[in-house]
Length: 488
Ligand code: NAD
Image (cartoon, helix red, strand yellow):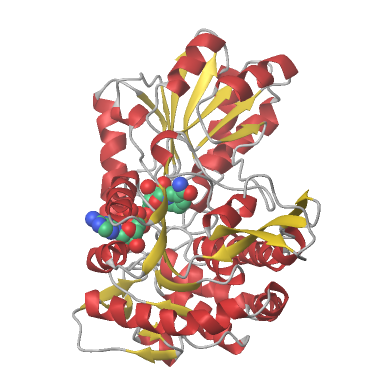
């Protein structure tokens, strides 16, 4: 893919203009072949401050118009996503290494997220009640001011759309920091928002790494921070942002358990589990990572190996993000082997013809894993599934409950009673019944439990309306004759 000039050297987007100072830079790599595709400025506190000042300046006018006026821009923006879907899809493929169909699904999801955002005026009708004769109380949702969004590498287009449309439609202005590994999609987002008519300063992008994140957490004029990334960094960001008294929701990593009962439909279960563990090369916070097989499920495992063998790296399986990621994933598989687990399908040392320098790991199925092994406990973030055997539902649930994480859990069975027990007892924020990737679709909100999320509420859907706004409560006496509220 030939990229436009604006993408060949990434710039910050501040007050409606792209700019790049003499910052240190980072090379952006195409993970499918190891080639350099662009460079990114490693911005500092002063760049963040400049973006915050632009967002502060834009806030009064942007928050001063109605919801109905603000959503007009996002109707146009959604149309632009649709119009440019081929280019946006190819950008995700280029910077993230996903296969085309997965990248396209990401843009379609971004469009759905915009559809929720444009429906906000229909949802926010505010509250009003006559509390004494002639005296009224009302609650209105007001924006917070300048807010920030920090995103990870695995969904370069979709995760920014978890936050940007809702936060902006609700009247906030924003400083965004995309992952420094995949910054291209956010540049196009800024360009398309401008084309849709978003006023300058409402949306700003500051590129870089840790230093930008720290500046966002510390900046006194930023009111709220949303973060999506690993648990290690989510904890750092949550602590640092709240220590400066900001509102924060920080989504972290995952170790999702799928509980498979012997009565599960073998074809559907095997294909779902394999799709869940290998889709997006396993680099999804909703990916299946541990399968807990209850009693005799060998017939399902055999089918899983069959399905996984049909997944061909470079064809229907994308690359992982970097050389370090490939090494990390392969080291986990090697460690599991040393620990006595049985590798049923081995994705190590995968080379794709014509893309010999790409970072590919084939689908990997590891059986007879025990709960003390690192592949059972830690997030691998690659196309790898660890199978743990359990005697019964109680043991299976205690294995799931033993994880520090709690993003998703799923159950595969044809028994309503067993499914209900797992729904009730699993310690995870998002549960799937006969579904391997139980992402709640709009208007339902997205967010995990335990070490998979810090802060109150979820990041999307109705929950995000709470996060991006504050309530203003007004009590009104409409005329002098009105009865006095007994409290006043
Ligand atoms: P990451 O935590 O390394 O990076 C996320 C963001 O934090 C990036 O913008 C990065 O620049 C910044 N960052 C990295 N190190 C930092 C530090 N020491 N201090 C301050 N900021 C820092 O995550 P990643 O590798 O880009 O993404 C993969 C992770 O994200 C996985 O753990 C995955 O499970 C998680 N994830 C979670 C969800 C969810 O909804 N829970 C969704 C997507 C991804």
